[in-house]
Length: 68
Image (tube, rainbow, N blue to C red; front, side, top):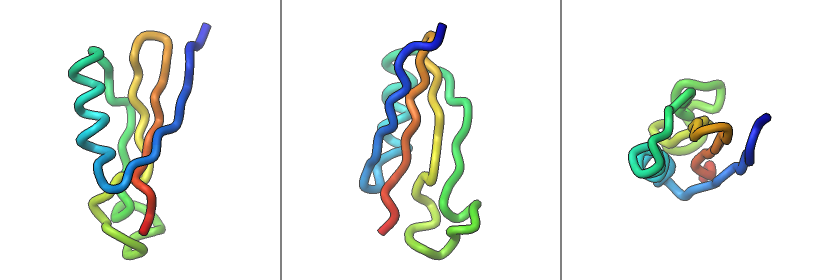
């Protein structure tokens, strides 16, 4: 059975937040892609997170930085 699956949005601090949740809650980072690694390259800060998934137990937290 799969637990909750929230999607969180940040203003340039997604990676920092996800790393905090990973360390604090013992999670596993399953996927992370930056805007610069996608077809949206150049449409904002290429270092910002376009999408990531963090697994904590049976739950997945998905998150991204809002494009500018």
